[in-house]
Amino acid sequence: MTPFHAAERTVRENELEQQVCVRLADGLAAIEAQDAITAISLCGMGGETIRDILEAGKARLSGQERLILQPNGGEQPLRVWLMEHDYRIVSEEVLRENRFDYEIIVAERTGPVKYTAEELYFGPLQMQARSPAFLLKWQRLLGKKQKTLNNFERAQKGVSEEKWQEVAQQIRWISALLA
Image (tube, rainbow, N blue to C red; front, side, top):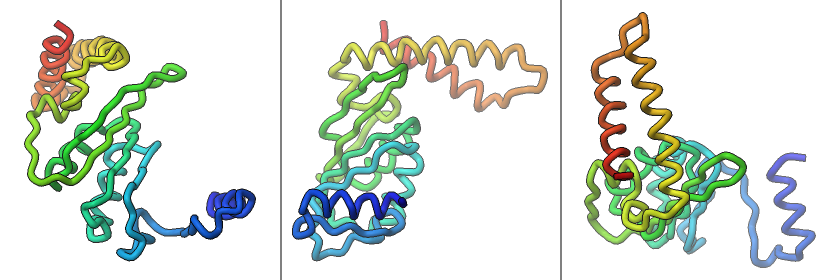
């Protein structure tokens, strides 16, 4: 059974046919203005993929929707897209489950917003809240980034100076965050 048919069956079994319309579409293509959508949830894929879905479907966004996003990595480019399209991050959280960190980002279009490079990297609200899960995530990532930099230094084939500098900058940011 396809996910579409499973969704139809779930709606039917719960007698929600009058409230729920199951549609099959690419990204946001099924959204129509008359739907008056109030929330869009994009979860369980990379941040770049979520960004691409939002970009491809931006003509279908009224600007009144709340975006509930759960990227599996690639949070920074997703936050950049949100900022560039006037979405303010109104809630963020890091959750840890089964050895994996999950970030949840909730955003609303409010008008121009400006985040620093560090806020785009870590999450502006998470930098302020500094939850235990957030700090543990970045402690783990600091070790991984330091190992990556050490591997770059031992690599027989040269790593580009740009990539080396990028990882070194991330290590500086994470170290400052955790200090």
